[in-house]
Length: 301
Image 1 (cartoon, helix red, strand yellow):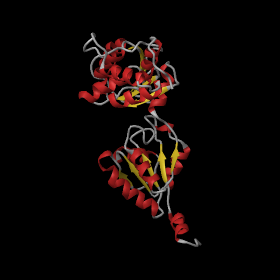
Image 2 (image 1 turned 90 degrees about the horizontal axis):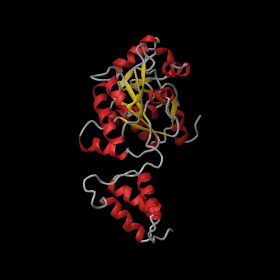
Image 3 (image 1 turned 60 degrees about the vertical axis):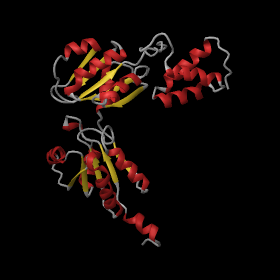
Image 4 (image 1 turned 135 degrees about the vertical axis):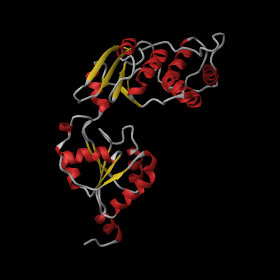
């Protein structure tokens, strides 16, 4: 029997399980995932109707709670209260691994703040499945999630990631695939790309080629869940200046030069400029090195 209140609280505390579920083919579920879903007191799902189909297929009958972006904080508090009282909760997403481009990460943050350690039940995830069949470099890579749908935020997204020299992985809806391929071509050039569609399902397709070839192949609206795997920027690719006025340096470069002449190191100056202008730090650091190589008398700390 617990000897003090702290021990009593620990004894009553349940568990939060982050359970990966199939991204299409139900046979991909793991034995451990099934065991966990059968043992918990309740299941929190992004789409309860979709999750119930999965549970029914495996004859699992557990209460389900809707945990979505719009109710993540209030529902999260409810779920953590249940866990603190000794109940165990499994968090699942529509398909794949929770916390990848879904509101699950907020629940994990809230759990950790309360001293509740989440338990990962690993399994399928679309981004890794697409990466390993893409034919592009599998490391290093960066996962960018869904691009913003429109406006200045979308423009900044493509501009900001133009110089990333790692393999890029994006999720996209079928309705915006053509638009995203065009924005990639305009901002990143005609790179190699793999477009993975309907992974693990009957009509699975992985298109490999250039972005322009993908545009031709997917003319019109595509169908199914889509993952884009894109070749990174070529090593040593020259950093382009602001296209608006070629007669003078862009503001970020002028400030970079000023910071370097003021005695900051390349690393310090790059970090400050990248933060202020919302630009990739690696890109600005390379620009700082180029300025140093140009022969100007900047002292390096």
